Image 1: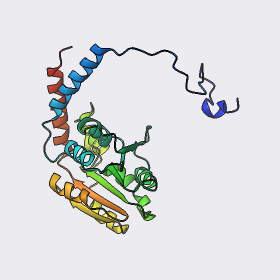
Image 2: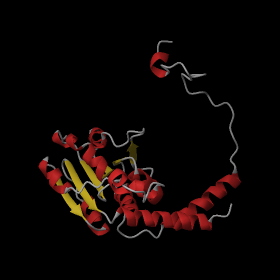
Image 3: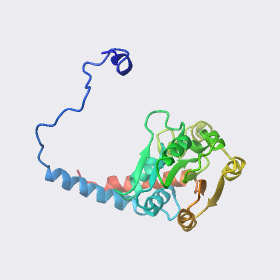
Image 4: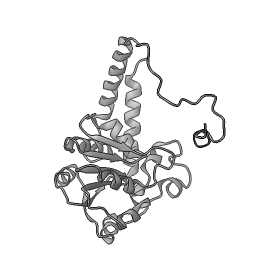
Length: 243
């Protein structure tokens, strides 16, 4: 099969499935497992429910709640997609997209612009570094309805919750603060934008529909404050779980 040169160029696979197998048997539901899952999910929600009114978790929850039915949502890698999973209530009436792979910071604005060509209304949640990494995409904007919400915490927030937090040189190597005015940068590309500093302002901004690309820059509290809340929430959850 010549396709194996593309699928398994190193010829290391023991078996390659060329089609989805047909399920011939059904597995009975494990009621005890379902009960345990729901129990721990409830405990997790309780641990996370005390997030500040204006925080990265609150932003993810608010955006997911405010979206109109049948709109599309693109979520960038790193903290945004984790916050959406942790803080937002699931919705079946919103089409959600995300990139996968190690190079998750690449091409996020371009991806969102491509998605917007297929939907009447598209939203995207990006971290500030992901926004800056693909900023040149704004030089050739489409005429589709796309609202980009930028979580501006001046750097890479996810690393503040990982083991390397606090090591010597952390801020320069992992935090990577950009110290840039994202509103001025967006304006330099001729892109309409606004800055919000509270949940109320974000809610109002999300209600306005713009005819083309619009950027909402959400100025967030410090990365350190967000990391402290998350670590305390994880601690509370662990203390509440009895396996």
